[in-house]
Image 1 (cartoon, helix red, strand yellow):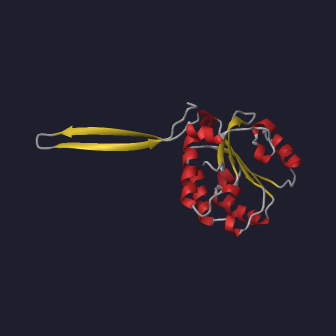
Image 2 (cartoon, rainbow, N blue to C red; image 1 turned 90 degrees about the horizontal axis):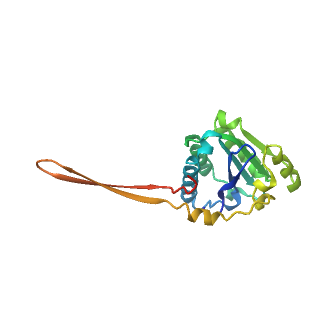
Image 3 (cartoon, helix red, strand yellow; image 1 turned 30 degrees about the vertical axis):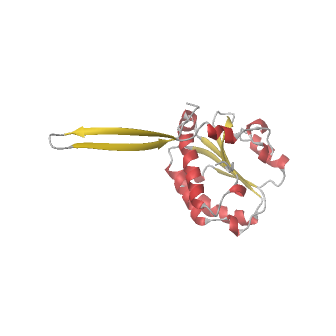
Length: 198
C-alpha cells in the first residue's frame, strides 16, 4: 500500500461516489501475497464508507506505460477478481486505461472473470494522449481536480499520511467461564481496520 499502487482518493465523482485508483506499474509481482493483503485491507476500508454502500464505488485502473509478460500474473488477477466479487461493495464503474498491447490481450480475460454484473460497468479507454483521456473522464463525472496528478489530474494527495491514520487496531478480549469442576479462559484477538472517516 505504501507504494501507492492502490489508493482511495479523498475526492468523489460528481455523484458523490468514492474513487479507488490503481496503477499496475507499481504492482509487486514477486510478492503476490503482499498484493492480495493490500487489496483486501483497502477494500475492507472502503466497505466501511457509507457512501460506497449507498452510492457505489468508481474504480480507475490506470495502466499507461511499457509492460511485458513479467508484469502479468494470472493467479494475482484471479485473486483480484475473487476479491471484487466477494466484498460488500457495489461497483458502479470500472475504468481501464492502457496503451499496452500485452495488457489489451490480458484484460478481456480479467473482465470476463469479473462476472456479468461488474462486466456491464467496465469502461475501456483507448486514448493515447493525456488531453484526450482527461476529456473522456469528464464525460463520466470525473473532473481534473478529482483525479491524481499521476494521470494528469490536479489532485495532490498524501496517501502515506492517510494510511498512517488508518492503521489496523488489535483488540484482545478475554472471557472466563467457570464451572464446578474447571475454569476455562478464552482469549480472542481481532484485528480490524481503523477508519478515521466514520
